[in-house]
Image (cartoon, rainbow, N blue to C red; front, side, top):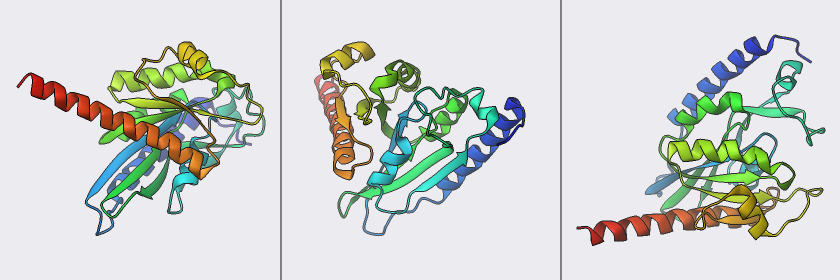
Length: 223
């Protein structure tokens, strides 16, 4: 395991992450038949299942930037409840999902650690919205993630990734605990399961469509 000082370790991770973000941004190509591409983010705190979620949905082999966790990272990452986790995303996860002949979704999974928050500015450019993965064992860690999205003005939905040992709670209780707005979707999902993950993604897409429709109606009323 590495023994580099945390500041040096973080700097090298950030440089590598920035390079990967730029590389993906410059090398995303649309199939010829596709007329519309939509960029969506998959976000959440550390070890909530973002890499698994993107991998379950992607029709192509997903791009992953996972690195083995080091002693330096252990000093700044909250490993509570993640004793079996040995790797972490240091830049992004990327996957593609074609819905029909004219529409394709590009999924960008972001790192969960706070020290990578500055990368979100690049990641959110051109994104229509975000799906926040949450863990009922560590709900409090979702507030920072949702706070960043709200500061950036990016609409989102929340999906509870149901881990095998996670306690079950009523969705109304979870909504209250997370202080979600009534219109913010809240669903359950299993990030390992393609069908379950698809339903969570649909909840986000429907939310974005409803927001677009509401905005259009409002503009017509004031025209």
